Length: 209
Image (tube, rainbow, N blue to C red):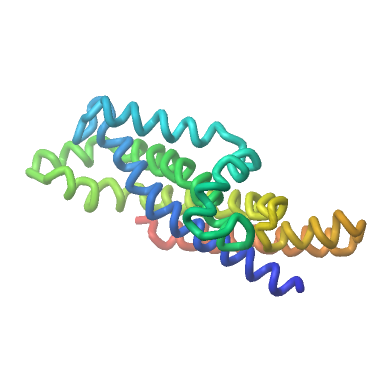
C-alpha cells in the first residue's frame, strides 16, 4: 500500500516537474528578453505575461485544484486520480518556474550579453549560448525547489482523491485515526524531499562552470 502510494507521488511530481519546466523555462526567458532594455523588448507582451503569471501564483493551490476541475476533466477525462492531479500541479508550478528562471537569468552579467551582441550574435544565439548556460545552475536549483514544493502540493491533492501519499494519509491516517500511518507517511515524505534536494544540488554543482 505504501509502495503504491509512493509510486503515485513520484509519478505525479515527476511529470509535473517535466511539464512545468517545458512551459516555465521558455516563459521565464520571454519575461526577461521582452522587458525594458531586453534583447527583444516588447513591453505589451511582457506586461500581459507578467499579469498572467502573477495572477496564477496568487491563487492558493487548494483553491486552484477545485477551480480548474472542469479543465482537468477536459484534459484527462477525469477529476480524480494521480493523472488528473498532474494538471493542477503543473498549472501551479509553471508560473513558479517562470519566475525562478526570470530571476536566474537576470543575474547573468550584463557584460557577457553585451560582448555577445558586439560579436553579432542574434537574440536566439544569446539565449541559447549565453543566458541559459550562464544561468543553468541557478535554474536547476530553482527547479529542484519546485519539485520539493510539488511534493507538498501532491499531498494536498489527496484531498480531492488525487492518489499518492496524501490520499493514503487522509483515508487511512486521518479518517481512521491511525497515527502509525501518518507517522510512516511523514517519514517517507521527509526522505523523498531530502533525496530530491540532494539530487538537485548534485546536478547543479555538476553544471557549474
